[in-house]
Amino acid sequence: MNYIKTTFSTLSAIILLTACNNPQKQQATEQQQDTVVQEATPSEKKQNIVFFGNSLTAGLGLENQTEAFPALIQQKIDSLGLNYTCINAGLSGETSAGGKDRIDWLLKEPIDVFVLELGANDGLRGIKPEATKKNLGEIVDKVIKAYPNCKLVLAGMKVPPSMGEAYFKEFEAIFPALAQEKNMTLVPFLLDNVAGITKLNQQDAVHPTKEGQLILAENVWKHLKGIL
Image 1 (spheres, rainbow, N blue to C red):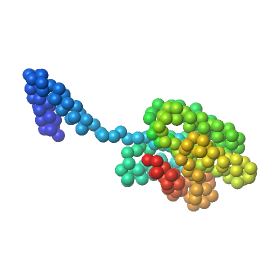
Image 2 (image 1 turned 90 degrees about the vertical axis):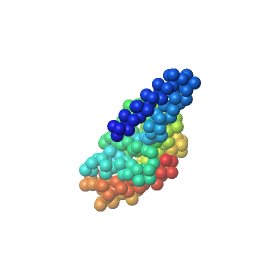
Image 3 (image 1 turned 60 degrees about the vertical axis):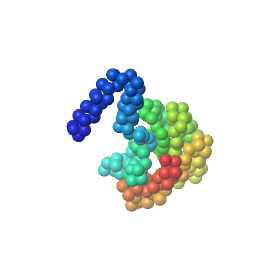
Image 4 (image 1 turned 135 degrees about the horizontal axis):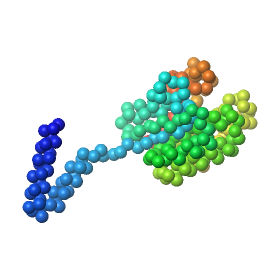
């Protein structure tokens, strides 16, 4: 490797010395140097996929974050040779109101694909669905303002039937309505085939196990892959 560097440096010095003695060759020499620099630079910078959510995204209760669905999706992306980096921006206990404030500092870094997974904690607290929808909409608006070309994905959520039929329906309706308004790709229900299944959830009956997270990854991936 040192031999290659030495050879390249010597060659560059010879070319530059020749060019200085011959003005007509100087422009061509500079073009050659530009070509060398361009070839040494990666042809394409990786794009960021930000998963912005609560404990379901963060992977609460798992041994490590590599078992959470954003990391599992990264594995799928890598296996296909796609040029994306998954960023897990999940925060346990996060509500839609908290997310509206927290999103600002995340916007300091480029976002190419934004996956929004919030609302579950609102539902469990019985927050009015219109307030949750408003907060989620404002989060999306902030992302669009900062990165107009960002692709948007919304993870749908439901509340337990024990919250009452009326509230259940109103809450469930938040997500398809918001996805349509903001032109987002909708994951109809993040916890599909996981919610209520004992073996796929931890002892709290709320947070998926490692096996449950694999299903969450599939639920998101089948909608996400089409826009990458």
